[in-house]
Length: 598
Image (cartoon, rainbow, N blue to C red; front, side):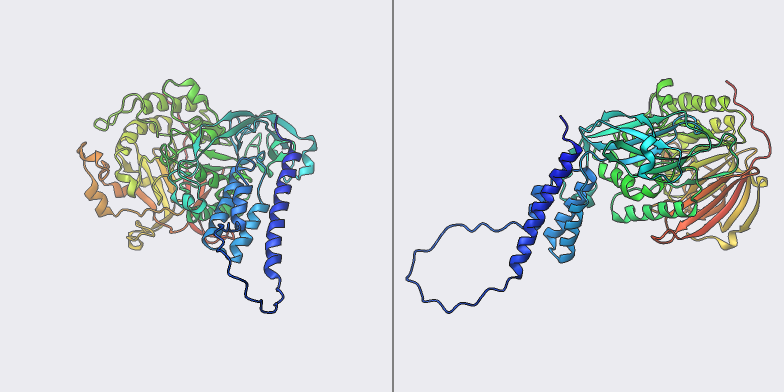
């Protein structure tokens, strides 16, 4: 039988009472001034007492034994462990006060965390939700009220949608993340199981502002917010940012700075697109703590304000399938297509207003048959390609078609010479041509890159589709902006516009020069596998707009207007949400789309 909420609160209160009583007694004893007695008469010699004196435990040692992860949420208990380690290294008053604060902030094990809302189905009427609890806590639901800024009292008559609980594998908690191993004392081999809760809200009202919370009676999360798509959606904005690579406080704080700035600058945003590399450490020794910090700290400002549109990056890749446990998006690709990616819900589409969004992943390109010699990939060509054409034929009338993926078809920094892009281009450029993709939103290269529109047959820029640029080569040639161009209007009638919005975090790459790109060019398929060459002739010419490293966390606001997609990119300047405008440009389409052949 589960312990009741009241019992757990009482247990926590009892522990804190005895802990504070002990701390108070120690403080009282330390403050007493003993009386000075008369000098004693020397005693007769006695045999020496050899009894071992047991030292009194320190305040942090008592806390370490008294408060265990079995009784409290993993995130709040880890914060306490970090305070204990800090006290053991330096028992300053500041560290003691932090220890006491972390004790007061401990959350009972039943509390939910890592909560997120995601599109799953029609954005007019549906919303998916996912959250974690400690292992063994299987009760859960999402409550929703049609109130923009609801309070707890407003949920008295909330609509409720039950969650499906799934026990995770034993996930490595600290894994390869050396910083948290040292900061918390939690060993790299420690694994925790969790319960992943997923719920789907349906029959929502279009064009309505909602508030939501997850958990169950006595154990509710904080309140989040979203707005359903309007029945006849007009102009709207959304946010794009990528590549937080959470691994230590520097990365956590810079990503949070960017998330906070985005919410403050674009409070009207309907959703946030995030094309992967949430965390730094992938593979079997990855770190669930990094995922936890992404949800609970770095991106909390975004996740409580709007839905997320995620897909995976290469650093998220792990057989521990953390990604699958954390998100609740449409999984029909895995159900309907023969070759299935490692994670669930990384390939899905949705229509919002006059835009068809194709969210996809090329991470699993190697499934079935693939070759770096002839650049073949059965998975991309026959399965992902078929899916693109199916979505396009199902929604032929939207004005714009926008893809979102982590990996690049084109890029100009350190990933431009990876061995995978020739495979991606060989298989996906014919798909982009058939489906007439207007905009490809990419991550992975951590640099601000404006590319194209690119002729999909000749891999050349369509220069007569570009107008209104500022600057030029005479202002370029440096890491801030290698081309010297800013702004511009880009027409996608005959080719796709590719965009990489730098990084929302701390890990930065720098633009390659024209000379370097020319040196790296080859058609030798053996050299193309060494991660130092590419096969795009005159590659630098494809960079038709701003191309540089902003040297700060960066996000982009995209506004869907009647006559264009307007891009406004910003750098996050401080921890208060202040920003600087980096670049403004427009993407237009002046002719109707066609549809691909079946």
